[in-house]
Image 1 (cartoon, rainbow, N blue to C red):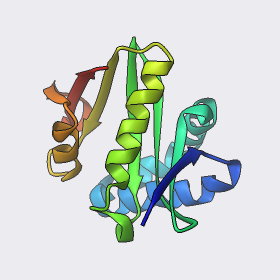
Image 2 (image 1 turned 60 degrees about the vertical axis):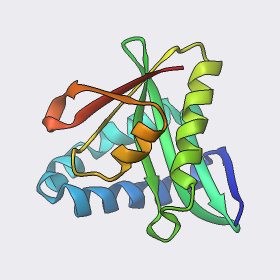
Image 3 (image 1 turned 45 degrees about the vertical axis):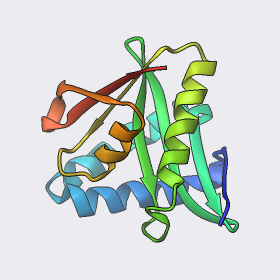
Image 4 (image 1 turned 90 degrees about the vertical axis):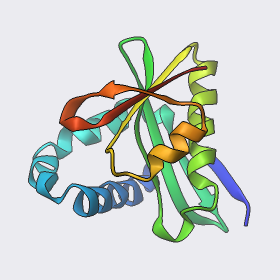
Length: 147
């Protein structure tokens, strides 16, 4: 099972939308109404940073995606998602490494992301060298790493 990463295509947006919707419904159901109310803002962020949107493919099937954006001197990981059937297969790590490499190619030396304290992905971030630097908005843990 080989993981192939590629830049996102506009035709990937429905799958990305479904991934974000799945996350909010399963991890933050109390925030779904607010997420939907701000959907245009989310879409705008995806479009404005489209060149930083990476898709993972396994056996020609959509397996996951990540998006990062420049934020206050950091390369901020906005979202990373792996389809349920491809979790624990290296897709998340591949997307995380691609984000770090892309940010470095674009001149960023500092990476940052935020994650819910109960999200098991935080272990992947720690394994990749990200250190917890505190708590941010919505009590998310903030992680940082130098490139």
